[in-house]
Length: 430
Image 1 (tube, one colour):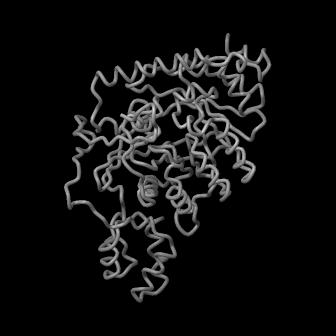
Image 2 (image 1 turned 90 degrees about the vertical axis):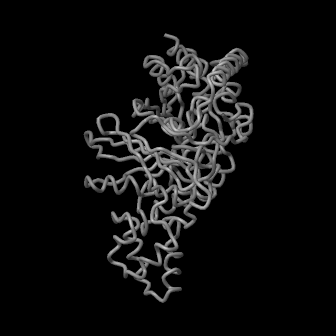
Image 3 (image 1 turned 45 degrees about the vertical axis):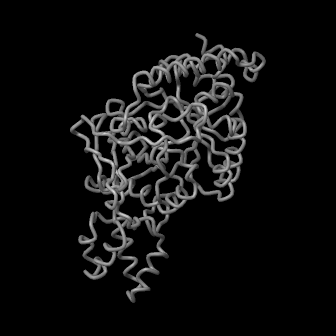
């Protein structure tokens, strides 16, 4: 598993066979069997036009292909009947139409949530999730897709199942957008469409920043997938150079920062990148993004009972974010086998939210979806990965207990509950 001390050290985990017959059986790829053709969806419209031009084909052929690729239901080149047979054969020889074709799906929440396990051509597994939100009042029906940007993750947040898998590799542009295309075809069969995409699946998006930005551009390009930029969210656990890159480009994407703690010592444990890019610097950079775009930054905060849900945590989070263009999402932790922690109870979460709201911060409490199918990122892939030994799990739990206890014990007294009124901080103590 990824070291808690050094989030930059990747661990390669070999897949194993699953006992769950609802999932595919995965074997490591055999030498020479990988499909080295690039994914077609990773090419820009200009690149496609050049490809047709080089073969003496009229320019409108590129438009026909783009229509089939991004809005059609074709799952093979043979089904693209608007293109000549020779063109279809040439495309099939040079490109893959789908880079995540081998997929298993699990439903939950009475069909409102579905999780996909995608197998890539090198045998690595990634996950994506469809979350349906029925129309309510004046709010229209939504279909949000949560997608992965890396196979595995090197950050190593201890409450995240992906962190236990270790880091395998970055995804390509096609491998990212093909997750959305997969769900788009599935929704189209029901007469529905994708309304939102969030980069909150496996991996740290801003450690694969250029590719993630290419994928987001493809998804928001009116000539390709055509999803509005404001319907795309890019998350980060605090990769400062990536946030600065976004600020320089000033797109209209929503930036989501995985905060999880305002106290330095505790965030060092919960988000190991904090040792390189501290929360205060990350929040300042995110504020610059908000200033450049006019877009409110979302701060994700996983609520862990007795760890980061104390009155001091609420007060210091309020102090860190007060006065900024920010929205806070409080999320009960998804239970993960390798941690000793449990989610905060509803009363404690609401009290925490009350402290934030008292200083003017927009705050929502998010309900977890798909717990029965392991819809937290990395849980389904972990079922197919080599599991650590019981001794290794026990040692990991022991380390987490020791470090979280030390972080709670060593919090500087002068930083406790001084930045918000005492009456506000007292709300959470009840």
